[in-house]
Length: 382
Image (cartoon, rainbow, N blue to C red):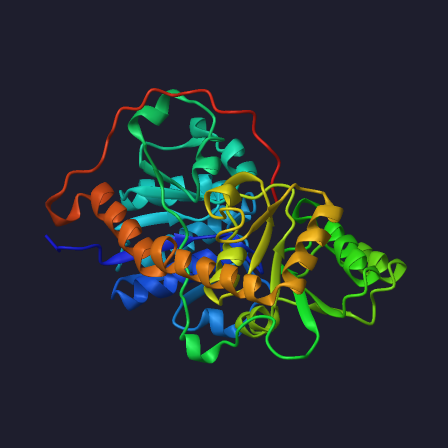
């Protein structure tokens, strides 16, 4: 028997400019670097920084989630993989549970699901899960708490594995709020109502009205982009504001920001926030969901109430008036990434789980009895 997992199939829907997709790509690259053959299959690829795709064996297979037609696509995928079957099937989207069940049954391989936000967790229907589902990974305890109780939870390992990102060489990233140039404040992620971009723009308007010279970056795309552009125009922010789509270098625009904001109304954890912290950017984030397990207010970042543009503006100005404090927060956040949210720790924990559910490396598959506990009422998420 091999002493580690040899092949992994990662199954996802659309890969787009959002934290869960970035996490999937980091996992795929990291597994390949650990010399684990990793095939990442998705239905669609949205605008993404091409550097994020390097080192990833990506297969875009349109239609496998479509009724009737999807069954034909799945059979083709199964035939293509029969010669080199995966040791484990890892779903990155709970909506792919039927497809994962189908493949797991035919390959006779264990299946794992990663749950990235509260809405996903609340929608997880274990009645649809086959006996091949052996583990559920949640990105935070907050997300895990939203998984509905079910009798099958007693036979499925539930584990929180915190997302991991890479901290770059300090020498290649400038310190925030350095020099006499305009300060840059920004946010990044899908432009959806739940992400709170309108409150971010209103906060920026207050900062400008208070006499601060700032540039504003909004990175991402989505259904709210048009209304956000209209709002920016009504707030007379067009000259200060730049919209950046997901195809631009993520490191470039995150490094350009002096202050990173996460104004979400709900958040599973915040992978984009972790990416900004890894670059030493001071973070101001809404105190919701898994964010509170990352940011300690005043030490590793600043916390504000959700949907409170006045408080968000006040904390922006607090950092603009005190660059040394901003840099201190940035360095503390970067150290937190090294200590608790680094990529290598995440890979170690995921590979360990793979080995446990497959029984590889001499360990028996995990079956830990758990008494289901009713979670708190599920919250919407984006």
